[in-house]
Length: 281
Length: 246
Image (cartoon, rainbow over all chains, first blue to last red; front, side, top):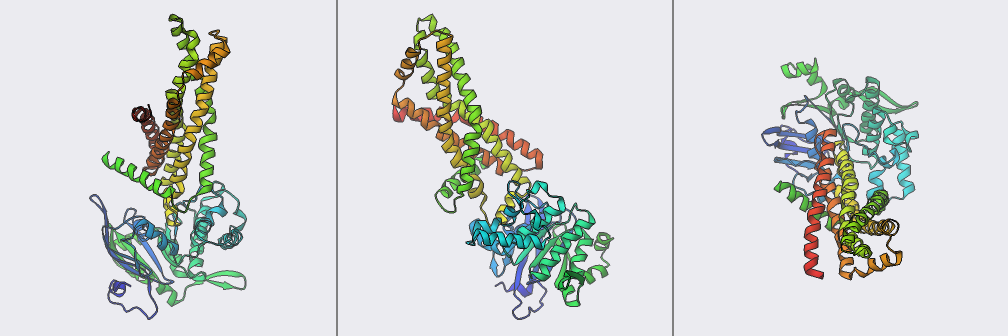
C-alpha cells in the first residue's frame, strides 16, 4: 500500500480498515509542450465519490484514462486498490481492470452487438459463468437502469439517454468496485440527465460502488452530492443526503491541469475564489 | 514515417504472437472469413472473368501475327495463375477489404469503442486484428483460385466464340504451359498479399484520429498504401520465389 494514502490528503489519518480505492500522487502528464496534468494528487476511499470539475481541456477525462491505464503518466504514482498501476504493462492492466468500470462520454456501445450483448460483454468474455447466468445478470442490471425490455435492441435504436444508461449497466454488470463516469450527462436534456444522475446515485448507495464522476454540469454534480438513494416500500427513493453522505462526496476542481480546489459541496459553494465563483455562476 | 513503420511491424509481430495463444476469438474469425471471403466473391468473379476475356481478345490478335492463335490458352493460364490472378485479387481486396477494415476499426477508435474494449479487459489486437489477419491471409488464396478459374473460363469463351480456337485445343494449351512451380507461385503469393492488405487496414484503422474526417482519411490511406504494397510485395515475393523454387 502506498504510504502516501494519508500524505496526499494533507496528513489526514485514514480510519482503520478504510483503505483507499484510488490514489493519485503527484501525477503529471504532457503531450509535447501541452501540459495536461501537473502534480495532481488525491485519494478516493471506498464508497466515496470524487467529482472532477473544470473547463474543457483541464485534464478531467485524462485522470480517468490514467486510472484505467489507457494513458501512462510522465511522472507520479497511481494506485488502484493498493496496487501501483502506472508502471504496469497492458497485459498486467487487464487484471486491474476487472475492478474498474467506465462509462464513456457518448456511451461507446459496440454498434454490432445488441444491448444485452453489450451489457454482458465482459461477463461473456472473461468469466466462467454459464450463458444463462450471464443472461440473468444482464437482465438484472438492465432492470436496475429501467431498460429491461431493450435487451434485444441494437444501440442505434436507442436515444442518447438510453445509450448512457446502457453504458452504465455495461460498466456495472461485472460488479466493479470503482466506476468512472466521463461526462455521462453532457448533451442530454435535463429530464434525461436527471435519470442518469439517479443511476449514478443508485450505483453508489445501493451497489456500494466507489465513483469518480467527470462533469461540467453543476446541476448534475450537486444532485449526486446532495441526494442519496434508499430502498423504500415503493421501490428506490431519492432523498436529501445525510451529513455523513455529504462528506463522502468531494469535488476536485481542475484548472489548466492543476488541482485548484478540493472539498465537499458546502465548501465549494462557500468558496470566494474568483475562478470557482465564475464557474458556479 | 519511421515511427509508423515501427508501429506497423510491432502490430504484425504482436498479432502473429497472439494468433498462437489464448484467448482466440473463433466466432469473430468465422465472421471475418465470411465477410472477407463471401463478401468479396462477386467482385473477384467479375474482375477475374473480364480480365481473362480481355486478355484472350488482346493476345489473340497479337498471336495471330505469328500464326500462334491456338496457343492463346497457354498465355492466359500462365498470366492469370502466375501474376494477374494474385495481383488483381489483391487489388480488389485492398479496395474492398482494406478500406472496410480501416473504416470499421477507425470508427471504433474515434467513438471510444476500442478504449471501451480495453476498459472491459479485452485486448483490441486479439479481438479485432488477429481474426481479420488470419481470415484475410486464408481467404486471399481461395479468392485467387476463383479469379484464376473464371479468368481462364473467360479466356475460353473468347477463344472459342471470337477467335474460333477449338475448345479441346484451348484446354490442352492451358495445361501444357503450366509447371508445378507456377502453381506454387500463384498459391504462395496471395497468402503474403492477404496478410499485407489486412494488416495495413488494421494498422491504419487503429491509428485513426480526428473524428469522422479522420475515418475518411484512414480509409483512403489504407487503400492507397495497401494497393501500392500489393504491387511492391508482388515484385519482391516473385523475385524471392524465382530464386527459391525455380
